[in-house]
Length: 470
Image (cartoon, rainbow, N blue to C red; front, side):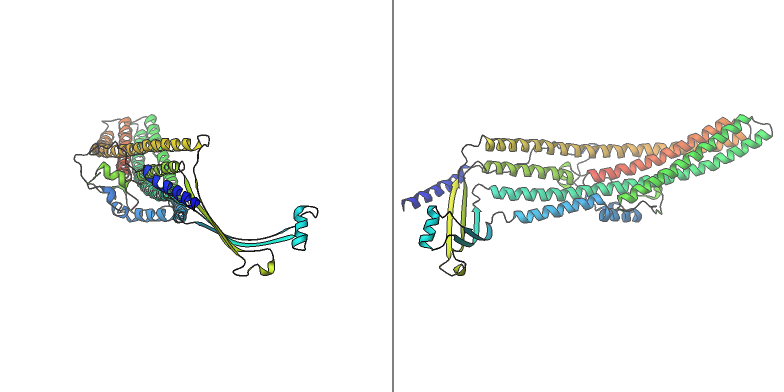
């Protein structure tokens, strides 16, 4: 009776000391967030990132490519498999609070020495030189979650699952943005190829006129050579552009999970349209919406739970074990009920005392890891804000650059007409015509590049704000 009281008293002390352990609560760290993004006039809650990608990209060809990418891209499929794997581990974690139960069947035959005490006793009492033992039993083991260790282990599994889920969303945003960037780059190359072919016609006309003037003695053979070189340079550019188009088509095909092939497109870059009212929203909303930032916060939450596990390992553990079944030294009455029944229950509290400071070290290391993850989370937020700001300033400046480049291209096109008229009339030389054509070609190519850069900056902003996974 006294022993029973002592056991009850020990359990009571252990359970009562729970209140002495501080529960770990997660406090979101202070984040380096401005009230509004740089290069935005007002802090508006609306954001283009709230649009689904099918609403943001209205080109049917591009939509089809993105759909294929989401379905077939191998990086994204691998990420989804990781989500499925973590989901299975999460299901298993829900059973951590239940006891471990096992069943075992064993048979043993022992034959001691005839000259041993056991051997002589067997002959004396059983009339045989060996002993048999047959056992079939259930075994149970259970640890009481006094300090929240099991709960924190379940939290770790949940955070790891959510990390893979957010990771898959982050990869989808990257895949969607990469497909859109590749598509717009392909349209730019198409436009540049069209410009180069138009310029080749001008070069052919210039060469033909120069040859006629040389034949009539109005110019030298050097003019013919220069005009011919201008034509050859344009032909070289056309070949390079056709090569780049084929490479870009291959890259897009691989990105959507297909073998390299041609990419059908029915529109030109000038026909593309993206939302012109660029709304960035609030930085705080971006943090909760952007998958990679959210993933880093989940890493922090996981490390917070790991601190709780390390702390719980330093306190007493209450474990209960039990086993029961049927046991007999004769096989013919092994399963006689109730004579062969047996059972035992054992409850105990284990308090770690000295383990070469291992538990204390694990606890301190877990806290340091949590502090590292706080810093990593802040850095992720800072990087995200920087990416949004970069995309905003790029978009604003590229609008101005596009306007200026368009004006320059128009001016230089008019200059070609003037140079050709003056050349035919003898008021300009062949170098002025060739220079005018070269400058116009470069200006048109540059204008196409700037238009593509502006489209890319809008796509970058959409991804940086967390758009593309819906």
